[in-house]
Amino acid sequence: MWYFSWILGIAFAAAFAILNAMWYEMKSDRARGVKAPFEAP
Image (cartoon, rainbow, N blue to C red; front, side, top):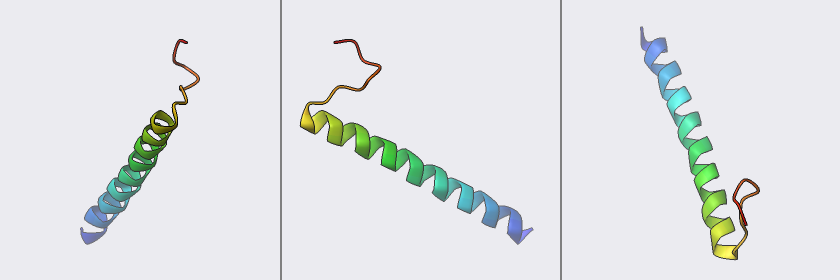
C-alpha cells in the first residue's frame, strides 16, 4: 500500500503548489495596485 500514500503525497504537493502560486499572484497584484477582474471598481 506504499503506492497509495505516494499518490496522496504527490497530489497534496501539487495542490499546495497550485494554491501557493494563486496566493502569490493575488499578493503581487495587490502590491502593484491592480484589481482582480471580478472585483467591483
